[in-house]
Length: 365
Image (cartoon, rainbow, N blue to C red; front, side):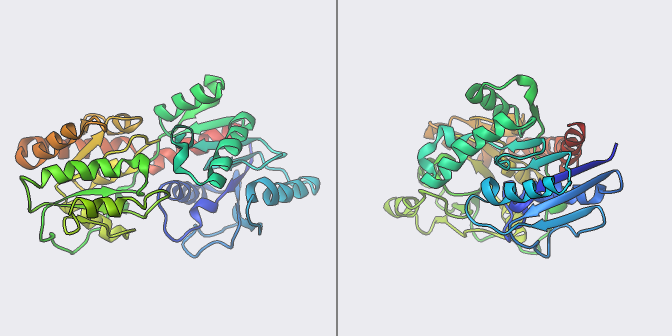
């Protein structure tokens, strides 16, 4: 049966791809390879496709719909309505990130990555919180199927929105070893722990810095590198480092390229994920793919993704994290064991598997 699938591709059409942008880009890349006379794709964008987007073909097309705020709620629905009147039919419209078109004349499928806006509402701008609260509810209620990126996210969706269990399908995020960049750079002058991700309150950054301030009392040569862009409500992090006198020990390189990130992972004592809430936690897999041991919070989806390949700690107990940091630098057996378990763990996840399961679901609608 021939299928014509429409996709909101905006998350992938950006310069710096992280998180949901990587997810959307990987799916589009797979869809482009699978597009043929039996399954066609039309990818809707707010702006013309960037040069790094998957190339168009006879069965994989882009359609640009200009518009500003409320694009998915006004400009896109208007275009879809016009196309419907003109006789154009899509079998399903797929949104990879929370929002479906308002009043969409076609069946819809949406991916929900996490419900952090419910559990940590103060971390969002009022405009963003309104969208996430109201537009996500609309998407979950109106969609034919909802994709959750972990069991944790599905459990949260069922709890908060009361939808039927059969409406929510778990499809894990992936990871590609091809993204591992072989860097010629050598080790840094100082041993260091690494955090990779957006800097915002639910990531528990100040907690990690507090633990590190205790750690360097006995290991003064170590540093903590916090790689990622500054998020909403992160303005107190740098002054906190100042207050503790850690300006030369805690470093903030900002957003880093794939090559820089690979180099940081490969040479780190360990990657630390202190988050209070994560819908999935891709940095876990990134670290493991670079033979970097992982020290992770046991909150939300992180143990689900990390399995037995992490050292876990209570993200409310500084002494617990401090103990795990000490183990990593003093017990080589534990370190090597974590690295080996990590190499096996990442085999569980791949973008190929994620994309194939997603396409299968879309074709079943």
